[in-house]
Image 1 (cartoon, one colour):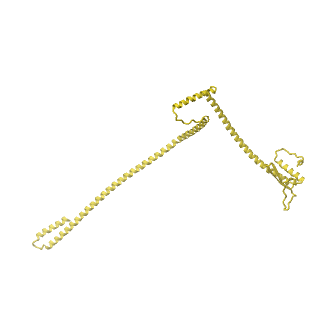
Image 2 (cartoon, rainbow, N blue to C red; image 1 turned 90 degrees about the vertical axis):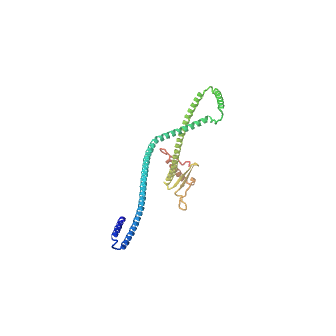
Image 3 (cartoon, rainbow, N blue to C red; image 1 turned 120 degrees about the vertical axis):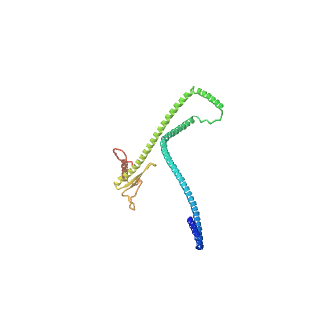
Amino acid sequence: TKHEAQRDIEQIQFKLSELSGDFDPKPWEDRIAEAEKAVEKHKCAVQEGHTKKSEQIVLLRAAERARDEHTASSAELQQQSSRFQSEINNLIERQRAEKVLARRVEVEMDPIREEVDAIRSILQEKIWVGKRETAKALQLCERPPRSERSSQDLLDELETLKARLAVQRERNQGLSAADAEREYLQARAKNKDNRQYMKESVKNLDLVEKGFTARKRTYNRSKKLMKASVSSSFGYYLRKRRHDGSLKFVEDEEALTLKVSMSHAVQDDGSRAVTKDMRSLSGGERSYTNLCLLLALGEVMSVPFRVMDEFDVYM
């Protein structure tokens, strides 16, 4: 170290002072100069070391300050995180409380809604009754237009109306307003009964019309089936003698059309000739055709028994 080198130099100088008269000091002075140079070099190295140490101390202090700042920032962030977590927990609790409150309010709102609906229906009924009564009142007298006259004008008009009312009362054989109102209420009640009776009559008329429509439908269906049954029976009885035929009822013209094909009336192509004119048939063919027609009509008649005698006299 520096102190050790200084001590060595002092010892060397002391020895040199003792031996100055016996040897040449030149080599020793050179060694001392070299030693001093080494000491200076060492001093420079030491100075550089102190400088680097100072720089390292500065860097260390800067690092310590950065660490302190980081620690403070971490602590602040931790505090903010704790505060945010606390706020989140408070919000969650508040949300739960609000949900509970909302469910409670919803439960409490159900009877209120029912009451509001009942009040709304009552109000609608009152509005309807008001409109109905207004319409009835308008039937008695027209709605007076709004007037911008003064109160004195209205009072004068009221007195005039009272005078006219007195004259009208005298004309009505002295009926008072109460009597007139009573007669009006009686007439109104009678009118209400008449309306109710009319409504029931209309309802009964609707039932009668529905019944008539159903009966008419059944009648038309039965009539159609009877027509088909008579035509089928007519052909059935004709086929008993190897003939054939059919009937057609024309209601609009109130006519009956017969189609008859006799077994012996064969055309050139081999098919049977069909005739609609009974006069083209022989007497026996007409009699048998008429008999088949009467038998077919008897099939759809609700009679316990049938008797026929000389049925073809006028045919």
